[in-house]
Amino acid sequence: MANTPSAKKAARKIERRTEVNRSRRSRVRTFLRKLEDALAAGDATQAQAAFQAAQPELMRAVTKGVIHKNTASRKVSRLAARVRKLSA
Picture 1 (cartoon, one colour):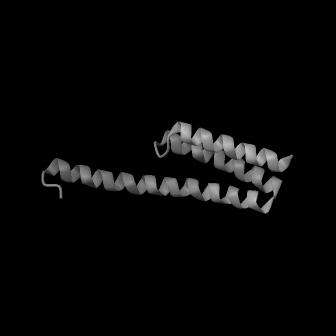
Picture 2 (cartoon, one colour):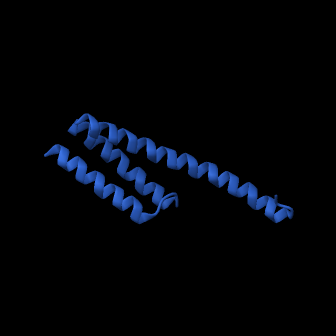
Picture 3 (tube, one colour):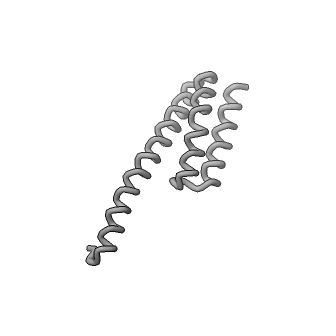
């Protein structure tokens, strides 16, 4: 347990930051889940719309420091390929 005042403050800050990051990560997962459901259903137009919504959400998570840039780029690339394959 934190003993010094600065350590106690740091613990409080970390707690708040963790809550914000958890919320952002959950939001990204929700968008990805919607896209996965559309892909599983085989609905190309719905998948395209879900992808258009999920892509900026992933990149926003990068700017907020929730996920790494390369991770988001890899996910976007793979999802785009799956959407393209479904549309073809």
